[in-house]
Structure formats: C-alpha cells, structure tokens
Image (cartoon, rainbow over all chains, first blue to last red; front, side, top):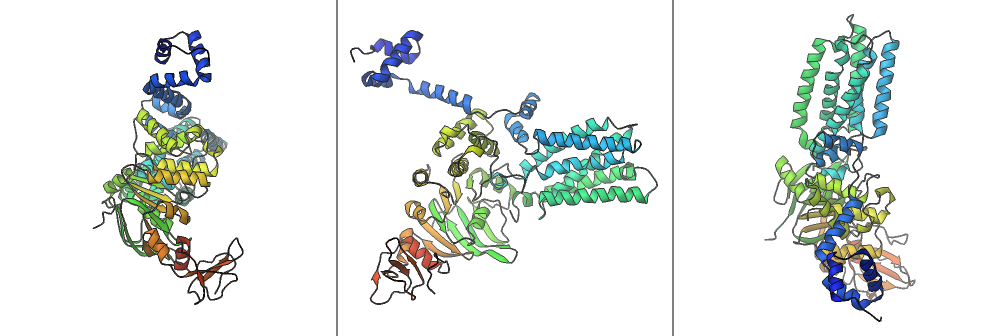
Length: 272
Length: 289
C-alpha cells in the first residue's frame, strides 16, 4: 500500500464531517488496508455506531402495525394494549367476513319470513360466542400455556380478547340490524342476550369445560330457549320482551360475579 | 439451611386414574438443577405447576417465597418467572421479533423503546438476531426452540423453568445453550427438565430423578453416577444376569446390574446410574430379564 489515510481525514470520517467522494475513497482504501482499518477502529465512536445500528434494526425488525392496531391507536388506545387487542386470533379479516356473511344471511332470512325479526334475533347473540371459542384457550390459541405463565396472560388477556370480540360482533350486528324490515325496538333486542351469553360462556370456562364446549353448550341452550318460547307462547318475540330483557340483565350480572369469583380457575386451570 | 426459590410439599396431581404426581416434595434454590425421568414420570406436570399454569390436586407450592393460589402473589411470581413449555405454541404469522415482543407486552413491558431493546437482547442471546424479521413458520425446529427459549429470558427472570430446552438442537446449538445458561447473570434458579444426560453433566450442580410421580434421587451428578459404581461391566456377549444390557458400537455388550465375580467392570456414567434407577426402562431390543 503506497499511501495511508491521514489522521485528520479519519477524524472527519468517523465524525461524519466528510464529503461523499472522500468518504467513498476512505471506505475503498480501508477495505484493502489493515493498518488504516485499525486506525479507523481505534478512533471510531462505537456508541454512535451502536445507536445507528440499533436504529437500522428497529426499522427492519419493528412489528408491523396491522390495520386494526392503527385504528385503535388512532382512537387513543395505548400501544401495548392495541397490540394485544389486534393480536386476538379471531379478529382477522376472514373472521370478520364470515360474521358479516352470517349476519347478512340472518337478515335475508328475516326478510324472507315476511319481516319476522326472530331469525336475526336468534342468530345475532351467537356471533360473539363463535368468536370467543377461538379467542383464547385450547385448542384455538397455540401459545396459551406460555401466555398463562405471564402476569397478564391469564384472566386479563381473556377479558381483553373477549371485549375485542364482543365489540366487533356488536358493531357488525348493529349495522346488520339496520337492514331489518320494520325495525323498531326489536332491532336492538339481541344486545342484552349477546352480552349475557358471552359472560355466561366465560363463566363456564372457569369450570372444567373448554371454551369450545362452553360456547357450544350455551349456544345450543339459547337456541332451544328461543324455539321453545316461540312455540309455547302466543306472544311474538316472547324471548326478547321486557321481562326477558330483565332476566338477561340479571343473568349477565350473576355470571359476571361468578366469573370474578372463579378467576383463579381461569388463571390456574386444573388441566391443560 | 438451603435458600429455596421453589418449594413443593406433598404435591399431588391425577389425570383420570393416573397419578402424575404422588406426594412429590422438593425444594430448589439458585443454580442449575436438572430433572431426569422417563416419559410419564411427572416432570412436565411438575414444571407446569411450578410455572403457575396448572393447579395441583393437593399439597402446597411456594414459589419465590409467595403463594401461587393468591392472585396478587401469582402475578408477582409471573413477573419474576421465565418459562419454556415442553410444547410452546407460536403464532405462525408473527415474525420472531413480533412473537417475543408480544410475550414482552404480556410481561408488562409497556415502554415500546425499552421493550424492543429487551427483545433484541434476548434474540441475540439465543442466536436469533439474524432471523428476527423472519416469520415463525419459516424457522427450523431448532430455531423455534431457541425462540421459545429467548422469550423465557425476558426481564432476567429469577426463576427459569426450561422443559426439554435442548430437544431438536444440533450439537453446536446445544453447546451454545449450555454456555448461555451457565453465564446467566445474578445466579437465578434454573430448573431444567431433560432426557439428555449430557446436559445434566455439563450444566447442573444438582440432579433430581423423578419416576412414578415421586423423587427417586436428589444429589449432585457425580453422586448419581457413583450409585452405579461397580455395577457396570463389559462382556463379549449378552449376560442374562444383568438388569439391563445393550450392544455397543464395537460389538461388545455393556451390562448394568449385579456383576458376576469375574466381570470386567467399567466406570459408571450418569446414564448407567439413571437407567439402573429406573430399571423398568427398556433399552433397545436387547434387554435382559
């Protein structure tokens, strides 16, 4: 090597105060010259390099924000909570599309029944149950055991994900309800049953039942209740009247109390 | 008196008619402790109970001097716990970084900048820095194992429970794992459940053999090996008097049990002692009666 990079040039290079042409020249030279490479490494500001490298890695590796996460953050939700909500397994596009199609089918069925809202009212409360089955616990959540071992991975995560599922379900069902023919108070009569069935399902998971079994049992019970009530009484929509709504409210409150009392069983189940 | 981080007293767990743990009692303190035992011995059940993800049917458990049945204590234990399950599940679409970041959120790291620094640190420790932005579904089995190990290291846990951490790792990765565990800062309590006796020899200050849901041995690896001293012999042919025997690569037979008077005895290893202890374990097809 017939020449070496002079100390002032190295200093200018490591501090970033050098023009591009000279920088390229230094870089081409140090690739081939171990003496200058060593001189450069001695003077290099390693802290600065680490900061730059950390910035590069952050740019490459930082988790992609999904659409739901961006929306939640825009609504003022904290970044970590937005991430937990957005990672709810069921809140993917495919589930939302499936729910929208199911609700559209229920509206069409109600219209085909001459404007009878019963098919829609019977089906809408089941939508969040379907979401709950795949939001947490075995077999839907592959990382469930690992999550349970973290401070917020048990009961708290269950509530966060259930809330997310319920919110999306209510939003979609609310939009679908506006398409019901002659919709009066009946258009909202599914709301309390939906909330009640969801909380009852969550409370049932604190027993030995899996989320799938709990949701299936509660869902079937609901359909039987609706059909039997419809057959046995002359009053239309008897399962959704004021008395029934009060009963749903009481059931929701009771299930919430049971759920809170048994949250340890959710956090630390007797079998995995 | 030994300082203990994890105390199990008379712990029972049944699955149907099977006793997975049958009054198991043990206390484990700082340092690396290995759990050895055949499949179905109750190791994973014990690890799950210690990780607070499974409730025992009976007995008492204290972890980090706290009671996992108490809600506040349980949260505090989980803050100070790192857990690698035997079968860690992953969200396949997450990248390696996203997965560890997700667990870090569950471990209450709300500051994004600090959290990302911690995620990078543990990924680098597990040797996954170069594949941080690769999706989990594109990682090899060994890389996934290391990814699960990486999340267990978040926040430098005081109690680190590793259920078969070296399963699926190649020899170089296994060596790196041992180096990493032996150099963990602040001397945490590490409980390592494994079938790989080399890991026990290389890493553990203490080894506990569990079989049938109870502790069969508790001591140092050297003491475990010593239990088979004078009970291992080599012969040209299979010996029906041996408790266990197998044909080695050179064509000779290694026997464990009560040797005949003229036997050519060999130095006992942890493998020999372990196999002798859980004698019902069958080795290959050449098991003597």
